Amino acid sequence: MENITKIFLLFLLLSTLTFWVIDHPPLQDYPLYLERIFIFTNYSDSILQIQKFYEINPLLITNLTNEIIGIVLTQLFDIQIVGKILISLSFGIFCFGLFKFLKTIYKDSLIPLTSIFFGYNILFMFGFLNYVLALGLLFMALSNILENGFSNIKKLVVFSLLIFFTHLFAFILLSVCFLVYGIFNREKKWLNVLL
Image (cartoon, rainbow, N blue to C red; front, top):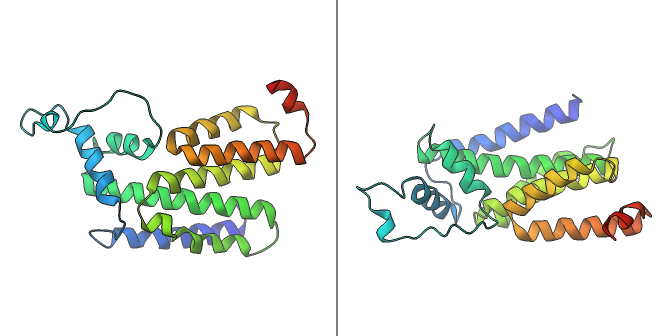
């Protein structure tokens, strides 16, 4: 591992520690995530009788990645700990994805280290954890495309599915990036696959 990556990971660790030293992170939608995880986890509890007030629609929708991870983690941890894990995960993947993307563009530069500063953005402060997570995955996918083109289609399909189930708008951005890269990179082979 290169020195710049080690420095970045140290900065990332120090940045995520701030979420763990306070009881209630000041993110607007954070209580909503905890509420939805609590409802999904305790829906059939006869004492709480949540089903009287809420109905779970079995329709498969996007924007549920953090909730699914949260439901699994509540089997191991308290809901407050799960919330902080989700915040750290969304923030960490966003920063790491941006770092990887910037490192792909600026190979021998310190510019990728600035990705930590972009982690604290308005979307994160509003608590849009699924969107922030999806943007981190988007940056990772774009980095992969810039490094390898469309040669590893399986990895791109995995990224696409993860991004789709994390946030639909980020998936649309990824689709546009695929299209623009394919057109301007003159790799017309992938167009033949689609047509």
